[in-house]
Amino acid sequence: MTWVFFEEKKMSVIPTRTVITPLQASFFLFFVGVSAALHIWKLAPALPELQQELQLSLVESGFLLSSVQIAGMSLGLVIGLFAERIGLRRCILIGMSIVVLGSILTTVTSQSTIVLLSRALEGMGFLMVVLPVPALFKRLVTAQQLSRIMGLWGCYMPTGTVIILLAGSWLLTLGSWRMLWLILAALSAVMLLLSWWIIPSDRQTAPAGQAVSGSRATSLISMVSTTLRSGRVWLVALIFCFYAAQWAGVIGFLPTIYMEGDISVTLAGFLTAWVAGANVIGNLGAGKLLQKKYKPQHLLWSGFITMMLCAVVAFGIGASLPVQFAAIVLFSAVGGLIPATCFYLAVNSAPTPQTTSSTVGWVQQLSSMGQFFGPPAIALAVNSLGGWQWAWVATMGFAVLGMAMVWGLNFFKGSTKV
Image (cartoon, rainbow, N blue to C red; front, side):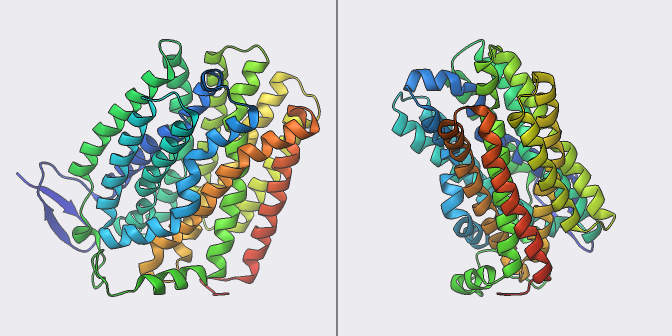
């Protein structure tokens, strides 16, 4: 038996056992992203237990939350280029293997330094999984389908966050954080096997006339130079950076904030999951609006302004818990317009087809930088100014910077270079 993989204008045969379409392969890639995202946010519900076991301060906890982003903030562009060289499918498989290894290694230590390093290793694996996916989408689906698929792809992180906050909080009532880590490692191992079976090779997906990944036709230096000379690529990356800093900081600390208010770990995880799940609404909405030709800048402005105002209501005016919760849900829901729009802009702002992965890599690298500095920045504001009621100061600062970058998009059309 063979698995026939249909493309828009050609058909090739892949050795396997059923029939799959490019759109179905794209949906599977979304679930691959979700499985990787589980490892990014598994720390949030377990943070109170880890704080106690490792004797961490609030700021140290912030760095533990963001340590998984170390690889992303330093290696995003490099891994994007690496993916093009070794093949997008192979990069995903290697990345998932690293995630499994890092998750298992974390469970065998009680030293905070080793935990930090293992989280950094998981972050590198995560990056190798998610960076090649947008480039694969561009190869698999038609131009008409791309905006909606990018809207779906923007949901992989909040979807994974919802699942881990709900399931993880429940599992933590049954066992330790180490049990949770091992369960997720086993799940990722299963997804690794499915990915090896389902994801088509680069030979089947490479556009006609384009060299298969691994070719040395285009020098790495040339690809880096072309990517980093694009002013539009820089702006999209910075927009994602300032969005990610806000979202990661608020979502990462929500379980801790709620538990300080005498809310149980299960209920705290449930409430935070609602907030993270609301982000899916914005991502899917952005995909539909982009397909209807709404301007990306308008979606980005709407997201940043709403996040800024909702952060003030949630933290700065002493609102009751129901009002605070409603504001944070709106913060996440409308803010979800930003990541889907950024992924769409990244894929379409790549200076050349060969720099799609490196462009997405650079955008992801600055997003990881935002996720790395966001939680500690919020924790620093809270510690310095005297309580969680000052968390809005940090989030508003990030929102203002993000809006400045959106305004800058008016000066860089298409892939115009600096």
